[in-house]
Image 1 (cartoon, rainbow, N blue to C red):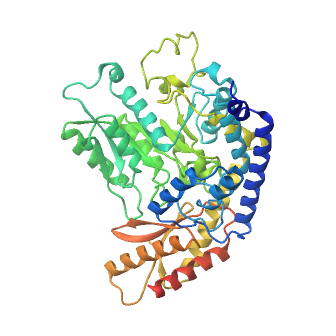
Image 2: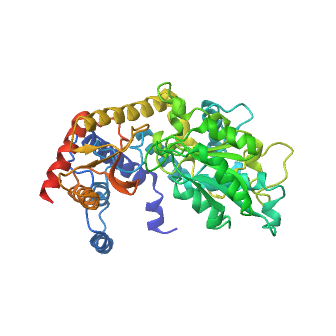
Image 3: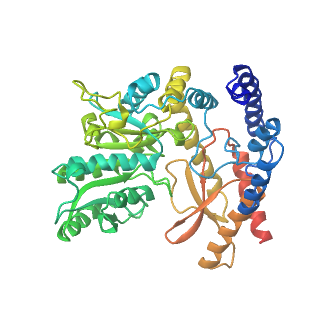
Amino acid sequence: MTDLLKRVYDPGHFREEGHHLVDLIADHLSSCLTQSEPKVLPWTEPNKNFEDWKQYLLSMPDIDEFWPLSIKETIHIHHPRYMGHQVCPSFPLSGLGEMINGTLNNGSAIYEMGPVSTAMERVVTDWLAQAIGFGLESSGILTSGGSLGNLTALLAARQHQSGYNHWTEGRRDHFHPAILVSSEAHYSIARAVQIMGWGEKGIVKVPLDSGYRTDVNRLEEKYRQATEGGLTVLALAANACSTSTGIYDQLGPMADFCAQHKLWFHIDGAHGGPAALTPRYKHFTAGIEKADSVVIDFHKMMGISALTTAVLFRNGAHSYETFDQQATYLLNDQSEEPWFNSAIRTLECTKNMMGLKVYSILKTYGEQVFIDYVTVCYDLARKFEEVLLASPDFELPYKPESNIVCFRYLAPGKNADSLDALNSAIRQKIMESGKFYIVQTKIGGKVYLRTTLMNPFTSETDMLQLIEEIRVTARSL
């Protein structure tokens, strides 16, 4: 045993560093909430950032300097003026769960490698499945992110809908599977289809209606065109809600269409699925209980640190159809449903203790904390909508439904192309200033600024100051 290894594993050294780091993080959270930290993002050009950290690695080791520098120089998602991507300011207790996960390192592909987190995973996925309206026969698993979650669900759909064992037999001649998707579907849906080998032809896009949701009146037409073109449509994927716009598809009519044509109904609820838990906003998810599979990211609208995604199946038995293989040293035949060996239902073998993080929040605060978080953030979008409607130099493309609000600045005398360039430049300038963090998207071919109000501590004052910052930036350009 070397002296270095003794120090690495020394509990006293860990206790000292752990206490120091928790104090640093708590101070960081305080500075974000009080906005004594003035910048959301301390912008550095990528190549310079790389060179700085490359040189820092070669400098004398000083861990007391390293932790604060790492915190200070990155984006501050807990800052109330972070309004960018769909990453939540995680509940601080979830971070302590990460500490347990990183230290105990219980990879939980099989039960004996993670008995506590495995049992917790079943508890929290059963709870969430039933909370969105599934019955007692439902089941779920946790996996690393919505992209992997969508792929896992669609693999199950392929196996169940193909009419033969697609996993063991592979592709058959004259059988080209396809899926109906919204033209606003997250790119991970198309990526999953292409990973499965269906190609671009296997992605049948359904146009949007005037409300920026999947046009249910075009489903029959697109389904007929696909089948007449030699495709076998296996599934329909819906948005709850769209990543770009925050608009919900009409889940009930889409579920009815799937029932009529015996299709698998999948809902990408990575962002907006948790609205189903809330009394105020659950009407947006009406019909979610009819889905065959639903993906919900705990790290978006449920306050859990990334990556933690639930893949929920209305009929839990379908989750076992995804992979039909044997790894005899891991997956022995069982006389009962082997829910406790997650490797038979996911692509992952070693897996983080995801269940522990969610369970810790449920145990400490109860399910009301999730309801409060979604409700407050969605309420903020209603307030921001009011602020924008009262500002004649801004326009909204639609009425927001979730906590995603798209808008753009209108400069007098500018044509459409000039407005696109101006709004893009405004967004870049504001990001580099670090005063706010917002992103942009395209809607109807036009560039819009896009905010996702993820922080329940964001105030109307923050919104008004963002509006003024945009005006000032526009004038400077």
